[in-house]
Amino acid sequence: MTQMRKLLVVDDDSDLLIATRMQLRGSYTVLTAESTDEAMKTLQEQDVDLVLLGVGLGGENGLDGIKKIHEVHPSVGVAMLSGMKDPKTVVTAIRAGAIDYLAKPLCENQLAEVVEKAVATRDVQERREALIVSQTSIGNGGVHIVYRSKRMGDLMAEADK
Image 1: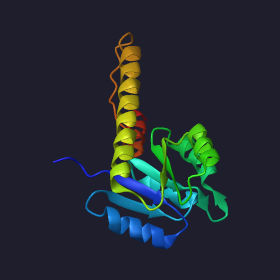
Image 2: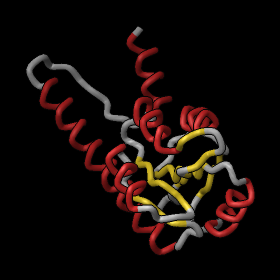
Image 3: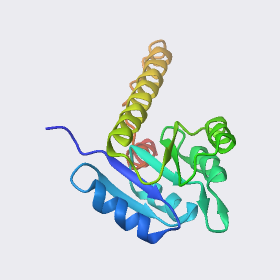
């Protein structure tokens, strides 16, 4: 049995968050946040496969949220979520680092494709990083444990001390 993918949906519309959680129940583990700051706190505590980030977040610009998320969590995929498909906004989002742009309401088949693309991209990045680490440690005889969670990184840093 495969592990259920974990999504973080960030939008200022609490009704949308509830509806999305209900719609995707059974297919995904859905976490929600109503702001970028709340999403950042969740990302510190949870390892997610994809962030669905609303373009308009009340007083915030969701496009700025892409940069904030990637500064702290560069390997997590971020897809933009909007009620309108404005070509200029789509291009801006992709240039800012979004892996895709989804229109509300969510189509589960399209979402599944985006989630799998995010997971595949992250897997490739992790393999690449592991290869780089293994290649750089061959000469000095060091041993490296490959991990992806922040908690494991904290534990390894503590063990090094």
